Image 1 (spheres, helix red, strand yellow):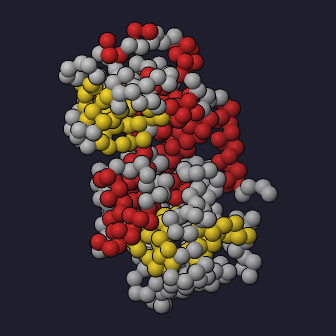
Image 2: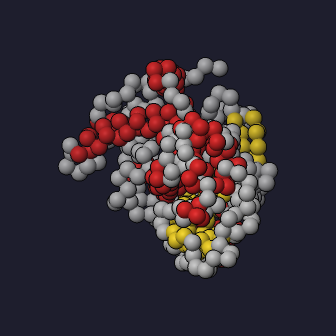
Image 3: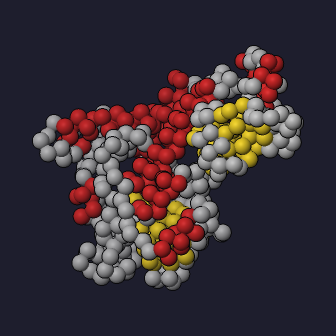
Length: 456
């Protein structure tokens, strides 16, 4: 099955760019390529907006820097406020043309899904399976209840959001939806094992919890998202089951078989909708409620990108900066450091807690993000090494399997970035090979305690 002309135009342009660049890391290069395209579009939009007195002129008024066949081309773009006013409620899950007016009764009662808030997943199309559940893309609500045919026949949603997560974030404030203590506990349980939330720091995690909106799905056969529609929301499933359908045509068709083939079921703890929000892509599947009493937590696109993507982006930048200062890793290529940065795990330790213990197997490398720590060795009075923000320890555990030569204890509450041996080898191969390639002379640091440089 051939791609539609706009999609083929993007693929052809990307292939041409890859042939010219011949990058060492094709995946990272592709990500950077699309970031650049979106930044160009955003710059054009900003220039257009600044030329009007009220700043609300749309991309429809401006020539696009992209070919008209390209999905990046701006046409019929409206503001988020206008877009919200056009949101429709559900109709039949098998009728792609049915719509109900905002004044008609909503399947969710009086309140619809929250508005746009101030405006990886495991592999495969469906990244996060909760039990027997899959992670797919999902359509989420606006101020009106969930739309049945959100994107069809409607003007394209705002395309001015940047793939650069920290772009123009100064004026943005995260939404906060009040919740009862009982709701907070249920929500924490629902997102506990979700991969998208696992790397958030405490502050960002609470921002996400505050921004999520609880939505009840009272009956089966309610269409939550529609294949081919714009993606405005990300969902976490607290209870109930939701079936996933994919139509080979790329969109829902009329008739009993219009949803396409059922490819999975999402259950409690699962999530869907993140891919469309991350990549500004249409929904890749239709999700329909399969049971009574379903409960979803919805996060709007802007908040999703600002908190979840910005958190990952900022963490990568911070970790890459750290890695440049680590002698063992400073000679790595930028894309290699980026891969390590993505694999680092943030861990917190209370004051007085052992981060590593003398005599135990060494299997991790640490960067001290915040707080202070000290290294102690049996038979030696006082600390043999003090650590502050930006210091590192445990790197020799990446080179051999010798036990820890000393204990590192948190002097204050600390936060460290942890990299396991297996992750390091999986991403970069044996460290010895990297050291030989870069002719890194580690001989002087193999006895770190005697040199007081580092601790294994």
